[in-house]
Image 1 (spheres, rainbow, N blue to C red):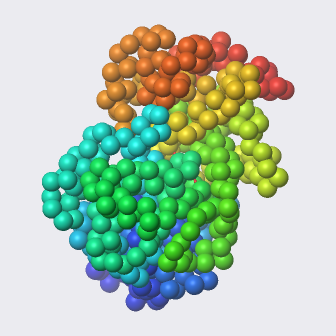
Image 2: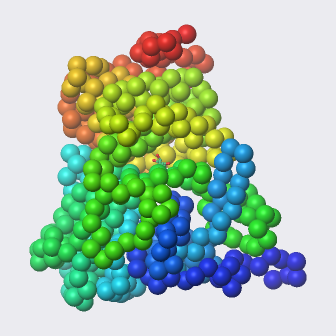
Image 3: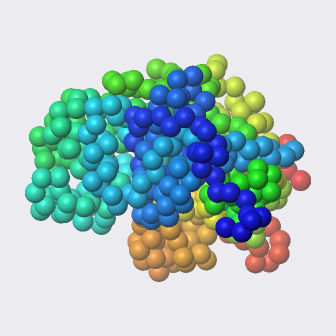
Length: 482
Ligand code: CS2
């Protein structure tokens, strides 16, 4: 280190308490750090709750954090400026491939929960919403679990690793534990239960019984926009804070966490930091998944088709913005409840999405479309049609995805091979095959296929003009027609 170089962030420099590990987290990424790690640090009893966070496919994030004693800087980025806070609640950052450490920690009696941000796609959901034990990576893990005695070897999927670690807890006699999903899935606790139990059943039916009696699956609705960190962010921290942090996280000031379920071994007092505990999570979950995440997906596909890069840029384009408002109108008709404050929520979203200082890349949101659209577009479309309306606002999200996958061949999606095959067909047949990958409920309904096919091309900029379908959309939005 040269005499002038700033020191690396560490606990001697920043004496934050190092709490004992009581939370194991799978999916050490930026969102976990801007959300759960922040809430845990700000819980009144946060000093008693340390998090051991494991990476997924790549060890890089664990290595970078471990080199800083788990510490990192949260850059809170508002429309007016940035503020900086060092977060110390992650006390151990571990390579996800370290199954030995995972089993040891999950088996420890002091560990109260395993929290998850493993992505929607990692729950192995089939298009009909059931657990798909035949999904390629899950099937590989199941084969490995079945053929390696004892703990089942070295599974590679988060589900395989979790099930193997839960077997360790059973064998250690450490008693009940909570599994807390923090992924954007409706009924994420139930989805996690189906996935974990489904995986255990296919391996060791007694383990599945033990899980049924000892594991509480908690549902949560999580929210904080967290774009990817850039080199400029890293340089900014060094300049503003006087230390080097190779892995800061950027997030908007807004955050929200709604939680529902039992924690048999306790939990931090996250409500001190603003988390809300409810009996019925569904209305909150739908509000967030449909209005925020649904609009995100719509902007991700429509915006990129129209040449935009970030959420804020896409929102400035009337074609994209009007599509979002039309979709919101449809979704709002199915969000009932005095506590939901939909007009205020929509208004806040306009401000959050419009925060041009947050470079939230549309390409980041566009990944895993088949899984995301099943949660974000399908429920609103189905609800609209069951009330006798067309659902064109939701169908447009699907049409934008269908146009997007025609031109963006490098897709990150659990069904990317099947998308490639479906793309080989033409016209309504192609639309039906692609919709089938999201749900047979869509691809099997000729009226929906015709509706989506008719909206295809809406965001095309080939001619440099909005297409006739955009004009069709415009009169779906009262008072917004030019
Ligand atoms: C986004 C979410 O990438 C996506 O699919 O919609 O990550 C979104 O930014 C978060 O859910 C915000 O809380």
